[in-house]
Image 1 (tube, rainbow, N blue to C red):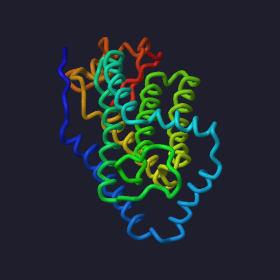
Image 2: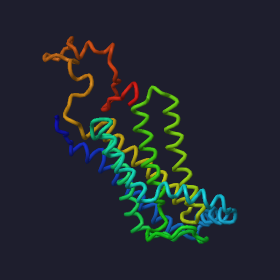
Image 3: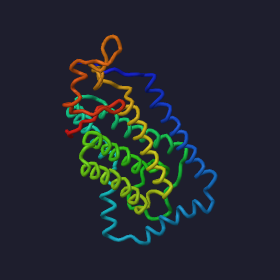
Length: 267
């Protein structure tokens, strides 16, 4: 069985550099909110969103938002990521999809935790419907984790069912609806400001994009096997090959994209 290979220089360029920049930006925005804009109209309007939501609370919405929040609780995300890590490895017979999801989920978590150390923003001044965790309000970890996990899952499924438009629409309806629902729920329940969940959405999206670029589209992790189209694509003299690899085009069941082989017929 071919051994996986890892490109450390590519990882530094495609993973560490953009995530470091995102971490610095997150800390900078958090400090801007807590140290510079705290007494401005912008922050006052931020608080006003939570006050309006708190005044409109109902028993039904309390129950719905509690269930939505549970979809992005830390134990839920960790367990679900661990299960999919193994499932992706078995189904796709390589580590790229598994590594992608793990990187997306845990990179946003690392940046979120780092930001809360430096930008210690207080929770909204309304009744909290959930126990307040020890981390600060900015950014929303529930929201960023939801984007990383559910949008990351939607991306993996889309890449492997890209010919089935209905399924692709379904994956992204769920993948986008859940994080947006969680963002609303965190504000409704008095746990985060609008700017907290807004940056959480951006943070999760950036982590998904970085992980996808590095592990799906331009993979720094490969399984040691030839990529689709490599075998038979060129003969030893560099000319276009005429062997089995070159003649398999008509009956091929895989479509080439840069860095990733996409299954045309689904799973």
